[in-house]
Amino acid sequence: MKKPLQSKTKIAPYITPQGQKRLSGELSYLWKVKRPQVTRAVAEAAAMGDRSENAEYIYG
Image 1 (spheres, rainbow, N blue to C red):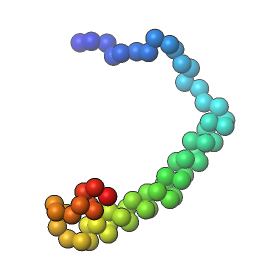
Image 2: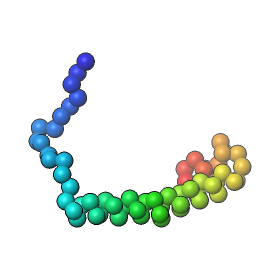
Image 3: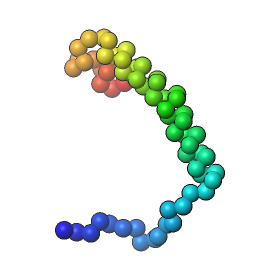
């Protein structure tokens, strides 16, 4: 079994307080804004009936 490929440069797995704040903000935005939009769009497309022929459901 082969070893997984590893980067030749080592990067410390640290995050700055600013980076953590930015990532927390992005996560909050995705959960509170984007996720409801996507679930609403999928629900609307699913309500259109047969999903196998529903381009809105398949491709959004």
